[in-house]
Length: 111
Length: 113
Image (cartoon, rainbow over all chains, first blue to last red; front, top):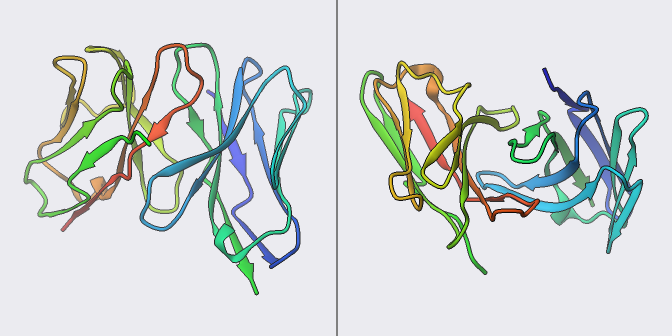
């Protein structure tokens, strides 16, 4: 079945860039998403990208998609301590199907 | 900003007891999902509704879990009897028809003792 994999942990210093990586297996994925989860809270959508795009930029966030390698990345520029959270990659296959999530990457930002 | 409302936020129960979680979607959102998130894991789909109809409940443990959305608006997820392994965050998410984005509620944290 479909699978989404992420590295489990990333540690950066405040002001640096963070890059969180994700790989997925479903070649029919139509949309790919990045969600953020703070402790004890629900998931907050950060950004998403359609599968026919290879890049999307939204303020400090840059998403890169390599559809050939089924690789998605999220770059956070000028990382702040408030960015410390768990980041989930998710993919959606055919229209109408639910999102499939990775296990999440814990981002730790030190000052 | 419109929100997905969930209650209760926290629930502690003993094993073999019954528990229920409630979700009120954003007005007009026809698609509703229940996800379970075990600590340290990503959310996993339990059930998906389109209006009042179940679209996908293939991962719902039907011997103890049930979900309904009788009028196609709010939804209830029930567990009876609860087991220790059911301790998790139960997340509700909703989506407007034709939209590409799910909006999640704050979740209901269940602890089974």
